[in-house]
Length: 112
Length: 115
Image (cartoon, rainbow over all chains, first blue to last red; front, side):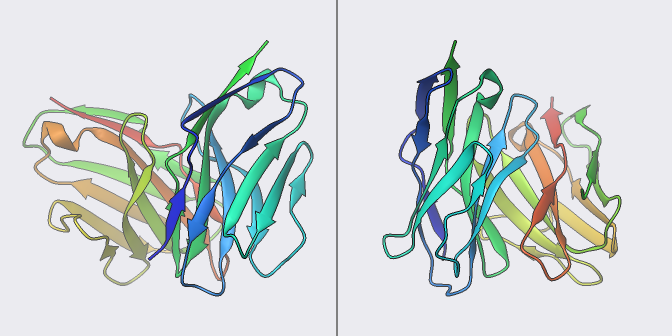
């Protein structure tokens, strides 16, 4: 069984600052993928960043980067230069055994 | 990019009626589609995995007779909530998987309200 844990229900950050969202996971699969999704008030799920478990190099997408610690089963998301449009729910997710399992989410607030 | 269309976006129905939600992959073939349910301020919970041409696989605790899933073509999966009750009111989201890949593309969701 797969589990994904997000221990921060809410986070806030000053505009232009950096914030890190935490995520830990557990899986028995050797081949899996990790994702961060953003869900704004429209509730459309938007893919933020993706990491293949077999790759040691941390994924980056513009202002978004991850810190993937495979041995610790940790997958945190760093948002640099936070913008007002980054305000949303962020979900960490694990795709393995043909299923995508989500964490409980972190609500990110951007303070102008 | 890959687009998934979900319809309707919002539906209100009376208790005891059935409601059908459609999920279409517009520009790619999706051999697998997933149906999720999301309660307010909660995460997405996988309800079932829908494979084209075969029976859906339901997660534990999901009533297959209540949530009928049909995946008759490579671009269309439907979820029918039968004999809906107020406790079925929720946000339902579908996602489609590119064949052989791990990327999932999401529909825009359906808010179901049962009166």
